[in-house]
Image (cartoon, rainbow, N blue to C red; front, side, top):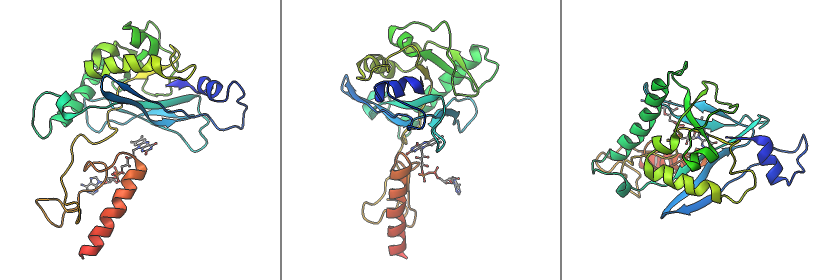
Length: 240
Ligand SMILES: Cc1cc2nc3c(=O)[nH]c(=O)nc-3n(C[C@H](O)[C@H](O)[C@H](O)COP(=O)(O)OP(=O)(O)OC[C@H]3O[C@@H](n4cnc5c(N)ncnc54)[C@H](O)[C@@H]3O)c2cc1C
């Protein structure tokens, strides 16, 4: 999460004026054979708690239509392939995701935060240099934050790639200690996929059942979920 004014300054070359839309950004990097990229950047947005079960911390970002908030946020995704995670059970990627989310919760609990949904957080440059942040900047995330060594708390394959990616982003003001990293946005795509017949869209072992959308592993985001929904609805209608 950055102050929106820093992103405006960079993207409008110092010429942003009230009434001009809040600036956006995106980036893609390749680090050690895996993609690292910004995800769902929300200009003038806020960070919101998005856990779906007790004992875990999950964050997501959103903007209201005016995009007039003080902060710019984006998820930063590190691509993870099944071979990156030990084990071979069909749900191992889900277990991996769950562990990351519960590690964040345990850290917050151990740090004695007054709100159990407070997010472990670290300033961006501190994260890349492996230093605990001594102070926390203002944030849009209502439950608040606790200073945390995210460079150690996140899985090594994720932290090390983020540490290399942030300084490389070719955008002035991006790599700055004014930016706060809050953990963790871990629901960018489904960690499992329910197999389905490519033509009928039915679940392979149960005809008449139509796995669809993000939870079934066929979409990640509003538009791809909607498109998958249209395809599945058409296949379903054709079968009736
Ligand atoms: C805070 C937040 C911000 C986001 N911002 C963006 C963004 O900026 N851009 C973007 O592209 N994506 C964004 N997303 C992701 C996007 O919302 C999802 O990718 C998309 O909604 C997935 O669509 P879906 O139809 O697959 O699932 P969902 O929208 O989750 O729909 C599943 C539906 O199934 C219902 N359901 C669940 N269980 C049952 C049951 N047993 N019986 C009956 N109904 C059930 C649920 O109530 C729900 O209505 C955001 C998500 C969150 C949480």
